[in-house]
Length: 295
DNA sequence: CATATGTCCTGAGAGC
DNA sequence: TGCTCTCAGGACATAT
Image (cartoon, rainbow, N blue to C red; front, side, top):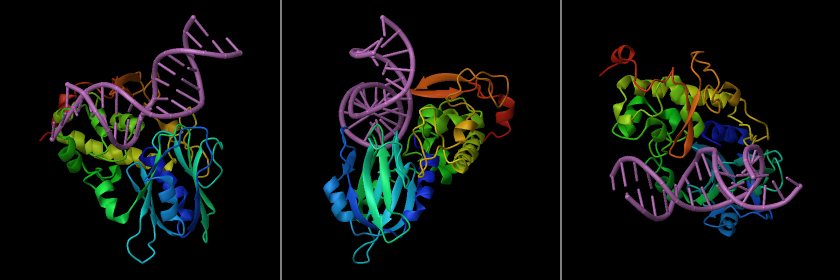
């Protein structure tokens, strides 16, 4: 499930496409329902063929491929959302069956950029320069999780009555955190996943800022998490390694690696699995420790 | 307005 | 063995 670290790894892994010109775009024949391409495949192909890739970016869990413009103005962008099982590859994909889109390249260091997606929930969108800010700016999507400060988090979530774990998944509040990393982040803060945002204290928001950066940056260094289904791969079709460092996600029943006494519990919030340690993350915060940071 | 729920999609695995 | 059923969770549409 590509979240911020996985998408960042994809971005870094396809750096060789920068400077390449798109020679053609191909949609392989597929018995499966086609993925969503906006506005449609024909227009994506027509408007990107002949363009040169001038840069790569990432907005939360979205990968941005920036193109040049025939008359020197600001160019269009291709925005790829991998969602559950989408992969962006330079190497051969895990299988031909779920190969959804191929950008054939020339004049640079890479020859093909492929989008592979087993479940087909991913999307590829051509975003004209004029529309980019409206669709992907701060108004539409929150600040990137790596840039989020305690003040920003408290400002955006501090009045919410939602449970903190559910709120961390809201991409308009902060962009890039998904179901897996939300559990890992909360475990490092010692915050119980069911605690309401509006009951968190100043020290909690500070702890969140630090844990978000720590977990996501460490996960990026390990090139993301490849879960037991093996779906996630980097651009060279290699597995990530951060799953070996998970402290709670998919660890139900195991002894907590943080306190060595609690047993990791799985609960369901908003129809999604949450994992936490009842010892490290008590439902009621310890008064002494919290009041030291109190307002 | 904020928050909650339903929907899409495929393949793996469970249960019979 | 082969069928049906459930589950996984990204973003977004719709409902409360």
